[in-house]
Length: 579
Image (cartoon, rainbow, N blue to C red; front, side):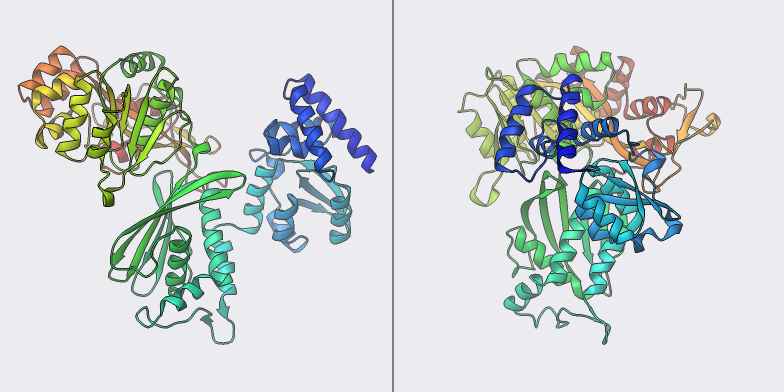
């Protein structure tokens, strides 16, 4: 295809995009103006970069215009033939740089997936490099990146390549100095952390965690080895670690970019950094603690684009959502979200705040730390070292004419009392607290010293939640359970339910993503009277269930009946504990 043909294709492409209302004339005009300053870039690439159209919609349009097959991550067309040694034809570096992927070879014909099938120079290079006739299929950038990982190996294999490259091949040792921690000077540590193998290992570790949808990276030192684990959908998975000698340079590198004190190893530290990965702004919260074998480090990965901050995304039924909205839109009161670490409490609070925000409301939050920035909201970070605690921040908020306040966590009596008093004096207050279920939250507030009368008068509702893993739609397998072996409160009403099997798409886990299950205790006159009388949480639970409260088990079983999660997953979270 000549450059004139390529330009013609781009013109025809934009016409179809406008006709199908995937693009408007104003967006096209801006891209044409941008092309004047970037003559080497095509209109379609500029449209994707500007966000005017998605990568997926673009490749679908290209497929139609050029009459080429469209390959997606879910289709069989984007699965490389593993037994043909296609890796020998094109290097992984070349494929990632140019967004191409060899799929199948027959005689002198090679089927290749491309994100830009109009790139004449790239096609000529492919013919020269492979000595094959090129058969083209179209695929998005994201899907090609995913399939490259399947063909060339990702995660552990990429990390292993970097680790292997850092070995001295003759002596079989890591190139980083092997002195004990006590002998290493600060200059030595910084120098080691800035070496290319360490930088590459750090970058690949972070990149792979993001690609695998990990929420956390755990780096742990032991006497004779390092453990590196990713938390994916709430479960920790081991990945192949580097040699023990890489531990200090790796941790030091991460501490440097997180603006932490690399000379301090005796005390816990917290830090953070941001990175742009695959076009997404991702924040990392970094924490270290001293152990007997060195510093353990955990990186929390915060990807705002991966989190839908809307009440609809919480997965409630239509009736549940109507009642829930009615309560969060009340002018004053206290709403508490409870559950273990990693159960999605902050996401639920952000979804509520995101819906309530508006120019007519003054909303302020105090968090430790602020996880996601929300436009139009005043967000404050806790800084205990200078006296800015949750309680201190709340007292200051009350002098700022607030309508709605969000408190990251209610940890002590002072914070709890201020939350309760604010709720009783005309403010809407949202916060989190750590308890096992909704009814026991009442006892928790009383135990830390809040008077039962104030607890009953201020509370609007308590939300207990967990995150259950979603079954992989590609490989989930239907079966009929033995109902006699289930707890009596587990009411299976579906003709068939599903179990996790595992496939390439879900990384052999059988699950892909998570969804929340809820137990919501709404305050009624009867429940308030029980709180004032210091009734036990067991009695409060029984009364709430009699009045229609769905327990965590009930919510989980509903997801099982809907085919969204497995019975084993609900049993794991509601009976055996866990995230």
